[in-house]
Length: 476
Image (tube, rainbow, N blue to C red; front, side, top):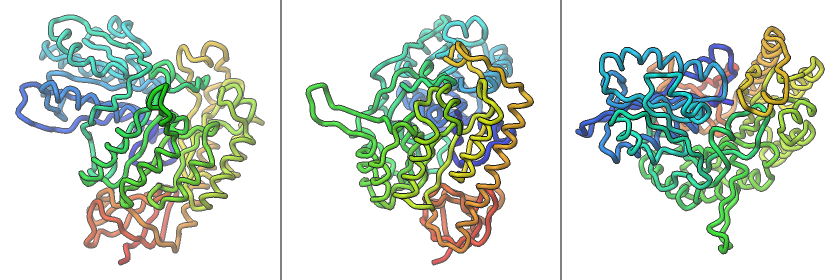
């Protein structure tokens, strides 16, 4: 499901809307004759891909703009995870019709998962679109732009088994200068029955660890202090230099290599899959203070039969064993978050209760919670009936949200009276006189600014909290 980049919270309907709000390219004028504008929807992988796209087109003489009215080329980097994410892009294209009418030479391109899912059909459905480009075809953008400049419709949705963009240095968009994402792999082999990702992002392939460590080192030199290693399933990261070579690297080893870049560089990762999540990773996390003690471990359901229908390849007992391993090796203070789907195909009331009981056992710090949204051409759409009434789905989701809100508050109260090391990421959204940052467990902390600034590590005494935020005072 989608991911919020800045902070994990309970997703209400309003939150879900915010999750689908785009991130836009920043204003940068280097004196080039043409400008590109890019809106990114959906998950962190899409935001990271937009940084790759920007890097590729900057090499071709494009500057970036934050105003589409000033752009020669407009890109929408799309998400196909949920139906309303696609609908938001359709609506956005309607809004851009006037741009095309007033400036016929403006090119409009659709990138990413929605482009991959609909392919050339998209050009028939959305007449103002000039380019349709899948997530593995971004190197081809200079040629596609040239083709569209000549009046042709340009399409490349080829899915690669090798492309990782390892040699491209991303241009950081919407950056706070403190946190950054590093893509360590692309694609997914898991074939969860509800998910379109294997069809829109292709087969799984891992990036060269040397290029990942080099990117982390470069980010630290630029002043970044928090990097998140990104993959659809980071736990299945596995790189081999060549068929003949004995040089290999798994995720635990990569995590250690990035942690060794510098003790002041915090390292996070997402997303983990319960079937692949190993004790080796947990012991590596325990070994290094700068590997953040936070794990996003999507359960999706608390019932084994539903998990089997979802093709998650683990059951309730396996999942609870992984939770027990986290608590045993990293302790109670390790932050854990999850994804939960309410009303999956044929889910009974008793099976829904299993999800609620799982949440009570684990007591997640955060959760992303959704009603099931059938996606075309997924195994679930082909083989299973979406037979849970809308009203029942929403009622079950409300019950999931209520439990999570209670558990989030309960978990945050455990931090009262404690001192946490916080990396300052910027000014609080509500007050210029307060700063905000995150703990190792990924909890947002707000505290009076005093003399501290963005990028500082600050020790904060936590004195109050709500279900989403810790409140406190910096101490020297």
